[in-house]
Image 1: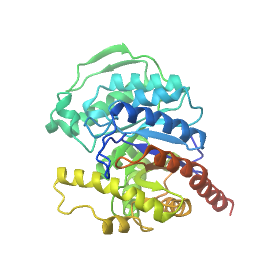
Image 2: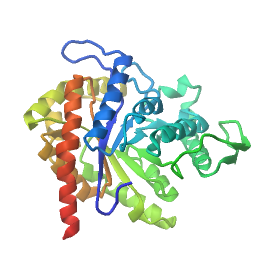
Image 3: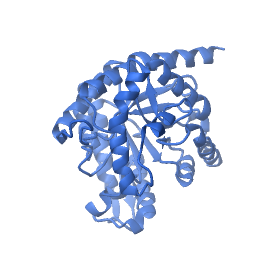
Image 4: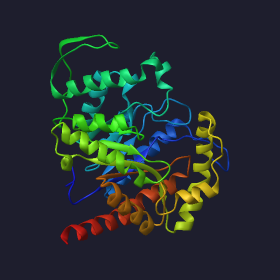
Length: 356
């Protein structure tokens, strides 16, 4: 893990989108998107990015139902990059199998696996795996408790209300890292911030709208809860996940990213009853310096990341590429620019500030 006081991890997150191409209407197969993802991870490792995360979804427009499997496919072809879910929908999964999948990934990657646990912003996994949304909160709390117990001890005794009890049984394989990193992922829920701080777990905030600086009270809440529970807040990691795209010029990046983003945001908006369609004015406003979209040339994206660091004190930044389907070559180029241009600017500036 990077030195939290002087550095910042920068990486990629994705849901492995297979949305219709906004221009041609063509739909990429899940198989092709999965193979593309492996290529992206290998490139991200080669250009010096710190982490690559895959979110779990169970619907036609995403291919990431099994993040650990995809990450494992790239693990043997990479050397340094950390590999994480973004997120694992723990509420509708079995913590034993989650631990086993990621401890296996940890073994293949020789200690580079992580779990980002969340309740999920989509709910399709609940009926798919036979869970009731009436138990939404209780399921997450119970299964997080079990997951943390498994990572702490080879043999586990545990009882809860939604899974059969475990009586002094062992869970294998054990992870290379001890303990296997578990993050709490939140879309901005205060209770999640308090839970993560109390448990002394790193937290990741999904910031996909509004102004990132508005999350400062949640960061403060997280640190206060950690301190009350006896944890050192300065040693805890804070990540953010935001949509964005890096191009050779800001104009090119903005134009390339708009149509696929608009198409997918409007799909989600219709599902959730949003009153207005996502348009270019809203998009351009979000690309402003204080907005939640990190879209532009390398210098501009780096400037926004540094502002995020200043306002929230984050130690890890995920750029979510892409929100809707984009040409694979453009996604690879954005990853290359993030690693070879954006990250060095951020690291140099942070090192300069720390030397003052």
